[in-house]
Image 1 (spheres, protein in one colour):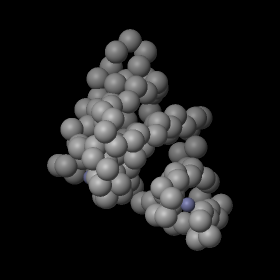
Image 2 (tube, rainbow, N blue to C red; image 1 turned 180 degrees about the vertical axis):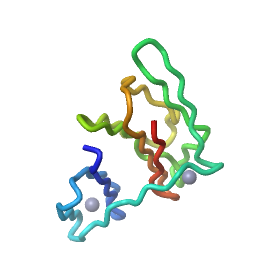
Image 3 (cartoon, rainbow, N blue to C red; image 1 turned 135 degrees about the vertical axis):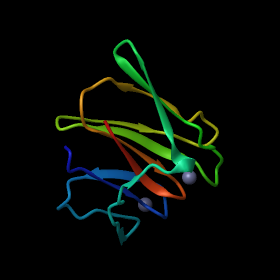
Length: 116
Ligand SMILES: [Zn+2]
Ligand SMILES: [Zn+2]
């Protein structure tokens, strides 16, 4: 599961998760896997542990033009995926696992990775 890749269709906004060697297409076009980048100043996250959950929040705006499209917690044994939409809060509850990475995708700036 560590090797999972994310794809976003530029036409319809669909988000697809797939293994690296799978070819993914949507709306008649082949999609390219998003490359994860480390968090920058505008895409900083905060994590807060509450009992057996991890509360993930971003100070990022959630307008229709510029929002966080999804958050995913990827571990070797599972992927926990949450889709977000404009006008929502950029906040998600994730299971509190050990290891793995949290991925989050900005509609303008692409995919970010936070290694745990
Ligand atoms: Zn599509
Ligand atoms: Zn952004």
